[in-house]
Amino acid sequence: MHAGDDADPLDQATRDFLAARPQLFGIAYRVLGSAAEAEDIVQEAWMRWQKADRTDVIEPAAFLATITTRLAINAAQSARVRRESYVGPWLPEPIDTSQDPQVGAERAEAVELAVLFLLEKLNPVERAAYVLREAFDYPYKQVADVLETSEANTRQLVSRARKHLAAERREPVSTADHRRLLEVFLNAAQSGDLSTLEDVLAADVVSYADGGGVRRASRVPVFGRTHVSKYLVAFAPRFWTGAEVRWVEANGFPAVLVTTGGDPLALLSVEVSAEGIERILWVMHPAKLSPYVASLDG
Image (cartoon, rainbow, N blue to C red):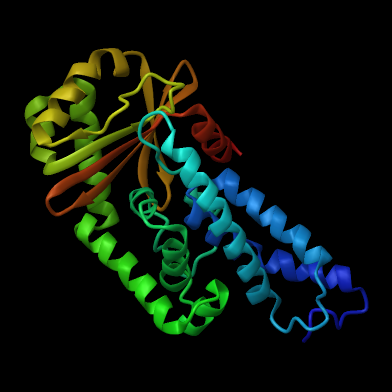
């Protein structure tokens, strides 16, 4: 059915948009790494959909996905400039996937925080191509149409993204093993147990803390098992004293929410392989934590 065939075109347009909305959010979030920015993109897509000539639109979902992807690419290009001046490491904004907050993917690919962090190193078009193909299983021809490029070039874009991820990360472990190692890590980090930390960390582990200059956090990544272990032991007394921990889910994996006096201090997430913990992500910026905590409590 054409989008304009209903007796009340705007009513039909609204239904079409609401049906597509979960996927639209999922696309924008993966391209941008920010739930807030993704919501803005989805809202802009709705405004454009309202104003569009929908008479000849045969597939509203495809039309809306195209609008959303192109808006997200433009926003990502602007975001890259802003993030170059970001204070300290920039980490993606976490989302609560335990309640299905409309991530909208047929597959969970490219929603893990560590993967989103790595995708940030790609240019926005490569990232969009990877997201459409790997997370939403779009045929190459459809991805090419969305990106206004050739199918051959689309395959190259996706291939480059895959190679980048393959070069940057090892094969992940099961969710159960992920949580088990995170539990061991958390206990060792809280107690300052240097020996156990060295046992669970991969040799080339990296710790990233995103405070954005608002929270006291390391403004440079910490590299290597020895340095990361000693770093964690050094700040353990002042960081964990009086803190409470809550097991949560963030971006499809177990994570730990750290609070002090009822206020969120950090979301701790790790990337785990058979070698141990590969990356430690501390999301500490209040602007990223507040929406996540609100979704947990909502």
